[in-house]
Every structure is written in structure tokens, then in C-alpha cells.
Length: 234
Image (cartoon, rainbow, N blue to C red):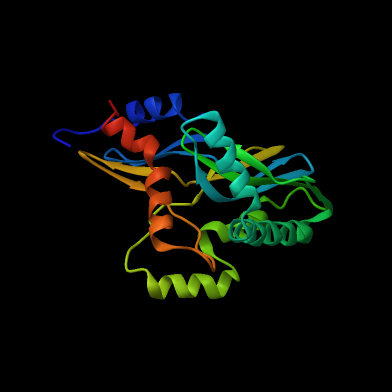
């Protein structure tokens, strides 16, 4: 930009157009602020109850109610997208099983509709064996399969070899910790504001059946909330 960008003004405008999202700002220094509007919860602890969710697979919103419904139904019926979501759900269920005496999940996968995207969503919950395990849960759940791959260790090693850039704080856990409750989101749909430069981050899950052009289009759609702030559509 031609002048410095105020990160908190940017976040204020972003917040108005991103319902059902976690809005955050982390200011590391006077000239570096990490902001975002993430739709994805990593986990929440309320006393001895632990909550998480599997959020994965994407379709755009439709221009009409009929088109929007058709896109959502296509997402629900897609073998490729259901597989992508199942990988995330299975991993989260397994990890919660390490900390909980009992776990449960939504009976049906639902479609979460955001302003520009719709995703497959399944909420998971459990009764903790020991409530004082926040650090351990955080270390286990991050990164989720949606952003770090699965199996976790092999995927992270492969990503480190393949990617020639640093993800920075993208998809990091961001949240708060209290005595009786904790909540963290996954810092996707995010941006790093540094003076007159704004770097926007998003990504897409890659599984068998993924098509490069379709995945790239999905990424472009996911950052629409930021792009419209910079160049509003007429």
C-alpha cells in the first residue's frame, strides 16, 4: 500500500463480514500484527468437558438459494470431500480418546455456511479424566490433519521437505487460558500486517482426487473476505 495499514481497523472491518468466526489480533511488535477471522475451533475446555470439531472440505456459496443448496448437497455427497473430512474427524476422535473417559460426536455431518464458503462440520465432545491437561491437549491436537496432514509425523516431515517457504504463524493455535476454561482456534484465514504490507494466508487440504486448478480456486475464494476489503466489488 501507499501508506501504513492499521491492523485493528482492518480487523474491525473484517469482523463485520465474518460471522461464526474467531476474530483475533496478536501484536508481536509495534509494526507487526497477526490478525484473522477463523471459522475453526481447535478445542475448548469448560471445567472437565472438552470440545473440538472436524472442519474440512469446501464449496463456494451459490449466487441463488437453489445453487447454494445444490453446492452444499454436492459437498455432502462427494466421496473425495467426505474422505478428506473423515481423516480429520478420525484423528480428532482418536486424540480425544487419549484424554477422555467418554467421547461423543454429532450423529450427522452438517454443512457450515460462511459468507464465501461452506464446509463439512462435525462437533466432538468428551469428559476429561484429568481437567489439568490443557498443554498436553494443545500439543496433541496441533497441527490438525487439515493443516498438518496425517499421519502427523510423516506428513510434517514431507511438508518441510516440499515447501520452500515459511508458514509463519499461519494455522497456529490462538486463544486464551483461564483457571476453569480454555479455548483455542486455528489461525487460518489470517494476515500479517507489517507497516504498508499485508500478507494474507490460507490453504487447502490435498487428498487423492484433488485437482490443482480446483484447489487453487478454493484458496482464492477463502481469502475473499480480505480481498474485498482491499478492492471492494462494484
